[in-house]
Image (cartoon, rainbow, N blue to C red; front, side, top):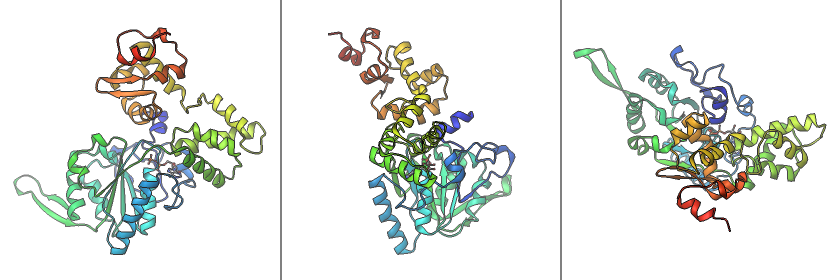
Amino acid sequence: MDKAEKEKTGKNTKRKNAETIQPPDETHAGVLHADTPLEEDERDGSLRPQNLKEFLGQKVLKENLAVFITAAKERKESLDHLFLIGPPGLGKTTLAQVVAHELGVDFKVTSAPALDKPKDLAGILTTVSEKTVFFIDEIHRLKPTIEEMLYIAMEDYELDWIIGQGPSARTIRIPIPPFTLVGATTKAGNVSSPLVSRFGISLRFSFYEQKDMEAIIKRSAGILNIAIETDAATFLAKSSRGTPRVANRLLRRMRDFAQILRSKSITLKVVEEGLKRLEIDNLGLERYDREILRIIIERYQGGPVGAETLAISVGEAVDTLEDYYEPYLIQTGLIQRTPRGRMVTPLAYQHLNIPSMFIQGNNENKGLLFQSP
Ligand code: ADP
């Protein structure tokens, strides 16, 4: 995974205020490693909301969670295990940290690829304090041996540990403190059902609404001490893919443009000029998004095309395509996922200004939309 991809997917880029568990040996290099490139907002951590009140948007999800947190606190129990699903940058890690803060407990964070051997997991779970919130990012990437160990840990707060080798080997059970596992994934479908069924609470993130994105941008601007005009915040919010991480990144870039353009605040003009220079259009699409649409249209007559074929055609990893680009293109109604593959919708042709004469074949989608009057 190259640097750009890590930044896009947000993978392996996490460094939190709380304790980050480092891999125990060099074979895990690259995972949560000291020299891993970090998102700017994650480097200083200042933009990350600390409590539920600061965590904007995701209203229903937040209201339910507040009930579960209060109930667990009243019973003086650890919160049930929490499964967080959603595209990168929507706030899964942030919410896990917020939960720990609201519960007043420790927070530990790691990523599934960092848990290579049973001892990696045992090393963490035998040393956590009671009720700790233990966050595992990319939980769909857990190794089967680790996953099985986690089942017992989640259910019984015990670890199965094998001592010795060969015929004399035996298993002992080690008790561990009650804890809350927060598992996050961008690919819920890739998480095994035995693991899913062990999470008592499952929360699915959706892309943020326009008004929430505006509020996030204004909050971040306040923290970063940048003045931003209301119409500029509205425009920027529209171009941020409904994703707080993208909004924060663009806000910082707009600050750069404002500075260079000698503007005291981020105005609509600065945002329009800045986004144009970054090749981000009015739907928040980047050059790569448009490239994906164009390739489906020009090489595959609008689709359907399988994810792997498409990934090869655009020169991108399937994971990045599926995790970062596709959810937003689906959300904006530019592509559809069908059992036979990805297809562009009429909106994609309109957005790219590609005329109907481009369409060939007998695809039902095309027939409907692109007949010349
Ligand atoms: P994920 O774990 O889903 O990839 P993160 O939790 O790392 O996403 O969030 C990315 C950034 O977006 C965070 O650093 C935080 O500053 C910001 N962010 C996420 N969710 C919210 C929110 N609800 N309100 C304000 N800022 C948020």
